[in-house]
Length: 426
Image (cartoon, rainbow, N blue to C red):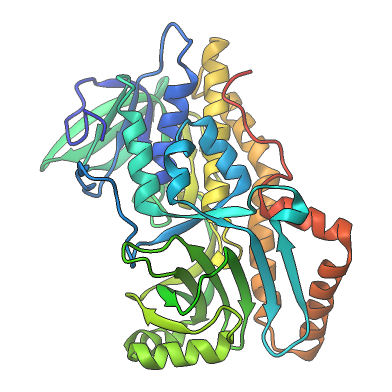
């Protein structure tokens, strides 16, 4: 962990203040610190995290059966390589060699294959704690980054040349100023509410059921997107756990009104119902881990920048998990922001000016519109039982499988390679 973890910031003035030290906030801090290595006046960065982070263990992390995981697109792997952390993550990341998309009870199906796309993998699945720990460890090398945890930023206000922050640390109130404030503290961001940022929310009336499970056979690095009468589900390949059991991560969208029932039934009944909906293409489900659930909604902040302020990650946009693109979109946003801030600093422009931040927003607009819109529309299409919709989506899956150019374009988008990746150096 950074040497300044759990310490009170010594300075009252920073160039960049990041609220939220999770995967997105830590990635932004690392991008800024790594990208300015050749600058004579490095940016002073402070990261505030409200949740107590685990102390680094002297032993390497072992795969945990119940660990929460994230899908990493191939494009995101390239960005993590830019941050210099992929080589430390690769051994724990399970490659996705094949993606199978199907609609239960209907003939429509499509298959994407890494070999056909001439890539090492379509994506990867990685435990969140492994990614988070690696990002934080990488920040240790940069003295210009201060990490304050646990500390809660309770208020912010615009001042001349930036923003003033009020935060709580060990029961006491403190203040500091920054040229740029970045909010990356998640979908229920209290700071966004305090600043009255305009955010548009659309509840899906669904909950995401999340659990890991073991299989009676190796998963062969196959990821499944399966649309069922209960709701869309994804089954993602994981590395084997510490006991060598094959694992997959389940993300199943079920009606909101049925969430409590799905959490209450015993493991045997849950696996029986899941097997009936999913089928046996991945084998038999043997052991079920701890179940979690959270309500699903589409969130898109209409106002993502102000003078001296930018919003990132789930604070800016929340997607349906059906396509597994939430973190990938957030990481691209963090890297684009770092790119624009570093370029402005190198050119001696104000990093928190509205001009700089509007440039950041303009680069993200198409990516956000495409990614949020796709996950929203595919959720609605495959949740509609009307016969015309069923026929349309199955014709679409068949067309995707049979039309090579369309399939190629779809694969490029799924891998995050259909847009230029941000660069930290000109």
